[in-house]
Image (cartoon, rainbow over all chains, first blue to last red; front, top):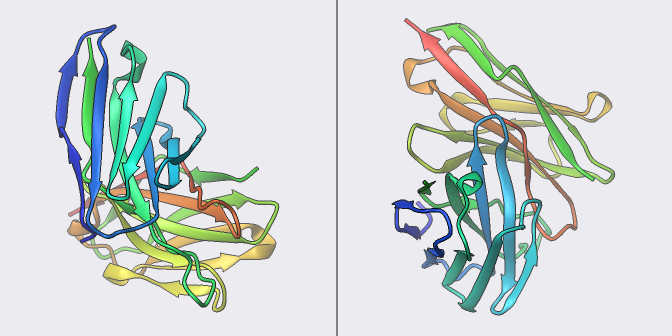
Length: 117
Length: 114
């Protein structure tokens, strides 16, 4: 299994509070991603990073911010949590394209279940 | 823009029967295609991928998928279902040369009946 951990694994919080989720990898992969998973929607990309301090928005970035100060850590912050952000959050990583030009698949962490009351 | 459609949010098969999970995609450039499996309370695990070359791709656990460009499809099959195959399956597409963003389908929950 790819070395990806997420913390916390479960969190219950109240509307309006800030929340930070952490993704940590030991693979030294360049790319890191945050997704949310909701029934009927599959996984939707929130933000991604293509290097230290290099990040970009995904499909559902409103209400979320990210930071990547080290290769191994990618933080997702909900500045003021809302009930619509109740979801399961997955971190993923992928490496550089190989010399053959083949795309490297994404590897997923175990997920964080967030409940906003 | 790329998109993925998985036909059937729930599929039930009997143990030993053929598994067929459908995936159609749209992409303006040659796609990379993936199938992932998710067991309860776990992350996603890659089953197989198509990038270039042979259009019939074999994956783990006896699954395979065929890339059909003319039909813009990438259906997942397994000749004989096992109880342990019960899980949710996601098809995903990425455009070659993109910033490695995956677009996922909404998923198909596979139930295997004894």
